[in-house]
Image: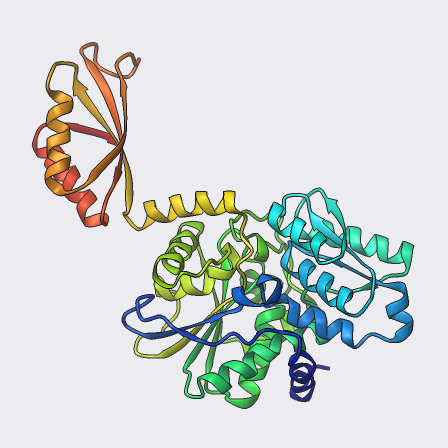
Length: 399
């Protein structure tokens, strides 16, 4: 049974192991609120997961330690288990989804674990880990549905109240629910008036659906850039704890997550992975009632593959109006390209790519298509460009 005493014990055990992550004031995230960030992306292994994994391993019996541990993970829990096992002189085997970011796979190996890649998503890796546990006699370290793991994650809740005693709202990423279960339990046990909101990716709303329908529901599939919270089914313990202690769970889109990642990079020089940025996305896009409140957004991790980061930044630039693609239908005659360029230049936008297509079965026999990629300030500037082009007689096909 999860207790506040167990969370305090976990805090004591972890004191000499984890890195203390101080709150960062972030007024630009949402000007209508006082936003603070809890940067667990700066934690050892790059995420909060080391807290629960290490505490769980520290509570194993000597016999269990001899046999070693096994875990399944989208990446971050894997690194936490690998580090915890290595520090305790225990062998570890980690089952990861084959689609896990390369950076997470390699980091897990560097922390001393043996890695088994499994086709599919987290839930497929979970079944493989259970199979190997029975075959080899390992102790299974569940990534979220374990009371010791939840207690370890709950130490964040204690730190939040210590660092900002008058906090009104805490926003937490949700995958399987281990993080928010521990944080919400700790906070509600000490300060029940503090609101705790959970955030899932709209492409993987397993806990959201389960809470809404008041029973655990399994998704047929998940699809999101937030791979760390792409979980098909919440845990039994975490579902119960979320029902009791979490005020509401909402979802954010991949575009909103991308915008949040970009904002953290530009405004605070912080790298967050998709799962780590969902709380910030919820605050940015007013998914929960935070106007006039003191709010903490928990950045749960920063282990994002650089190739994915590049694509996410591109998506974030488009979502925030910082870049724009536009296709214009022109009459194929001299001076058209120059005139279009002059209109765009008059607004202060910058053309970075031009593609001229003369032969097209959809264009007029005397027409052509001009596709432009532009750097822009915001959506208002994009709308201004559209209006000026339309007034000048140009037809915008898409953009």
